[in-house]
Length: 174
Image (tube, rainbow, N blue to C red; front, side):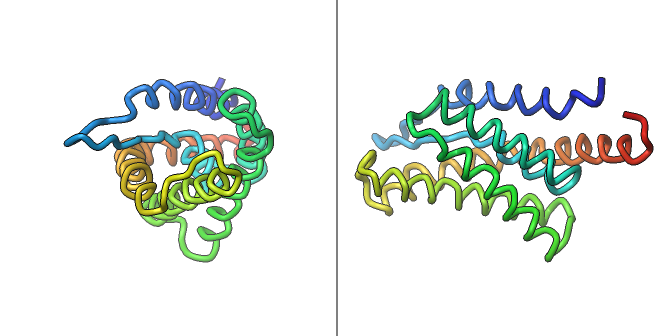
C-alpha cells in the first residue's frame, strides 16, 4: 500500500492544481492578480531529493505530458520543463545541502524559474503580450506567495513521505 502512496499523492496534486486555479484571478484594488498553483512540481522536487531521482524524473515526464495534453496545446513543453526543473533541484541540493529549509528555498526559486521560462516561451510564440514588469507584478509574485504558503504548510509532509518510502525501500519491505 505504501508503495502506491507517492504516485497517488502525485495524481491528487495533479488534479488539485486546476481546482485551486479556480480561485484565480483575485481582484485587489481594481488589479487582477493570478495565482498559479505548482503543487505537483514542488512535490516531484521533494521526491527527487529525498527519495529517488529516477522515479521523480519518470513522474515528471509522465505528468508533464499529461499537463501538456490536458491544459495546453503545445505537446512537450511541460514534459521538458518538469524533468529539467527536477534535475536542477537534485543537482543543486547535492552541491549545497539536503536540509528542508534549503530544499524549500531551492524549490521556490525553481518554481519562479519555471514560471519565467513559461512566460518567455509564451511571449516568444506570441501567445501572451504583456511586459515583464506586469507579469512579475500580477503573476509571478502572487504565484510565489501562494506556492510559498502551500510549501511551508506541506513541505515537511512531502519530506516525511519521501523519507518513509526511501527507508522502506532500503529495508526491502516493498
